[in-house]
Length: 72
Image (tube, rainbow, N blue to C red; front, side, top):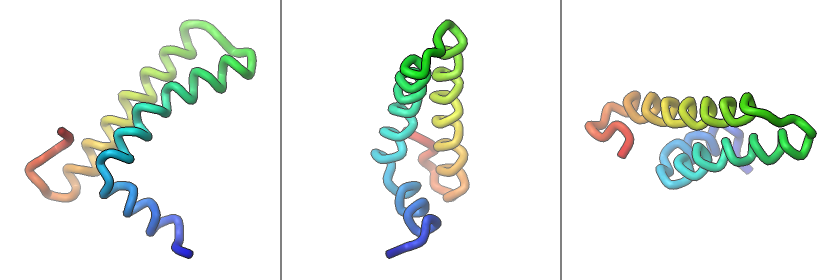
């Protein structure tokens, strides 16, 4: 069994998995908050911020690799 760091490094190398994670995260946030009884425009604003933050994180981690390809 590997450590969390090993799994994280493998995940960062898998572009499809990172895209899926960054795109499904806002949906999970909306569903969980709605089920918990929270609602309103701020829930959607939080989800949009999570989506943008996830894509910025992906671009940052891709640029650290030193490749020419930033994201897509």
